[in-house]
Image 1 (cartoon, helix red, strand yellow):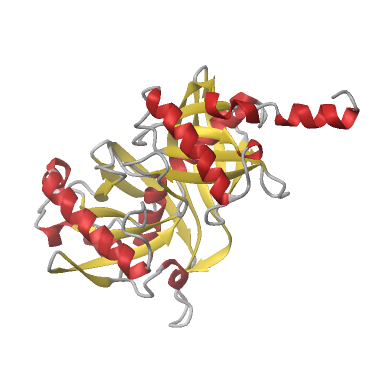
Image 2: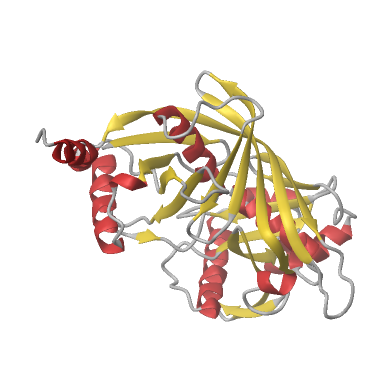
Length: 353
């Protein structure tokens, strides 16, 4: 079987892309094969690769590619979380699928429509430019129909008080592209953007503790990767400053799905990001986001609340200027027997076997 590696700028690690059609459909058997693949990667020096994308041409007439994200967890090669998605890995998967012949060659202006099997998202990856070793994209997370704000709040309200390490902390639990817990960094004693970006293990530990309490609130395992968490506060020059956590450390910037979720949260009245954005007038139009790894921006398009019963709804969210570098392909030795399965089936049908 052939494996592919691609890296989306801003991601904490490359994505390992595999052809889902050549892997078992049964989840237990699938995870057994993925554990073998991870052991092979670890032995080859790839222990840092914790993102896996399983892709194949979609049978759905509205999509080009079916995508399933698998988050590998530190500690052992057979630990995985299948609950969420990853926008950076979606882009990496599109580039790898094109290089492998699963998709047509990428050209500027092309739109690849991806169906995310983990959560039902539809993602449109529009190619802005193509280079020898990569491509640039504008990415839009599109809803099949308007999603009421209430459906994006898994705790049922814009803010939830959690208890973590003996202290009460207000967070906003929002689920758009991925589930996130957003907390005002100032409530944790972080006064400004500079202090947030310079913070070390103490703040990281507090955020991990709050994330664990959020997982408890949602009935999810503490040892998994979801919900994710980010601390936010107003930027000094407008917009929102954010520091996010990934598995198992600080995120170098913020996940693409985190940008989408944060942009959506700014539109939902009463959430922590909504309040922070209103402090410096950045709650309308393009939302500028500053991270330790640079700046990005998101446009979240919503309906306007019309009455107490019509709270507003999400239509789509767009993030521009994303870049992917293709790092190469290789034979995945432990799963090499899967590469020729289709050939054997064809020979058997032809009577040549």
